[in-house]
Image 1 (cartoon, helix red, strand yellow):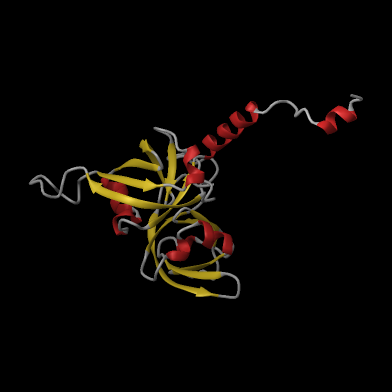
Image 2 (tube, one colour):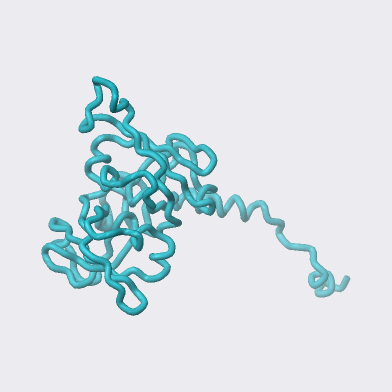
Length: 224
């Protein structure tokens, strides 16, 4: 389990096809030297298994499901990725519960400074930002105003929802500490809905179902 509090970014070095999987190599001094072979970590919100670890680099294999559902397969060498190690038992839950099971890849449609760049008061280092993401249709049902969402593995709060697009306020610390500052409009981004919202939605849908469906088979089985 993760909390969506990014520890640092890493740099994608390469992607190599290896007969059914695609192996990524990530340069991540500060994280790599804390990993052991087989450890889990979140890479831009995707839970992966660390392989061939050394003090500077780690590798991970991407299965076809990961390539189909996330943004990782579309990355190019030198791309920045967000990194987070699993949350230790008893640690503070600084963000929200993030499983690393991405629901789908959305599209970043805007990342604009709150203070316009044309303003004399604009300062790129200190301004807040407004992030807009168009989420997949299958994920829209779990987007809740003021609810949590993980974008690229970052625990964020939904400020507004308009059709299939969510808006999120981004603090300067988040902008610079994560890969957001390195993304361009149109970039695919990993989206994971809050698991608690998904569970509540599932229970609500189950409650709407009748206790049984009156069918011909049921009538015959009960002597009608």
